[in-house]
Length: 139
View (spheres, rainbow, N blue to C red):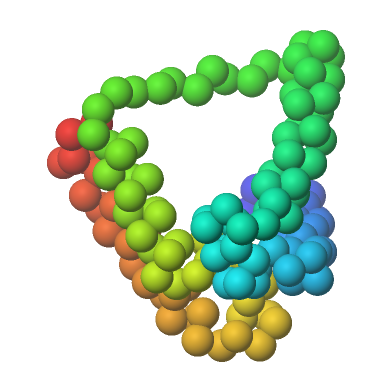
């Protein structure tokens, strides 16, 4: 054990608390509702787009503040090729089939939608498989 373990554990508790709070906000705001997601994907309602816009309205000044304070943010390395289309298609297909993106899966389980635990296991298996195959994939 390192000397930073108690400090690290305190932060893990804070992250867990923030995650639980975030899950509650997602659930109460109906952002995990399959009907809300379908409404947005079919362009029948602006609710989710308004939420996304509010996230941008919060994030943009936050990043500007970090930049002004001299915080070093590593640049994102963008690639080219089929991987973006294939990854986006796989993500969208999964989102459409399951009715939820990966973010609120735990919130859905916490809200009583127990069948989403199967989706969490599948997402973890897919993530592990990608990590295992990553060295052999064309990046």
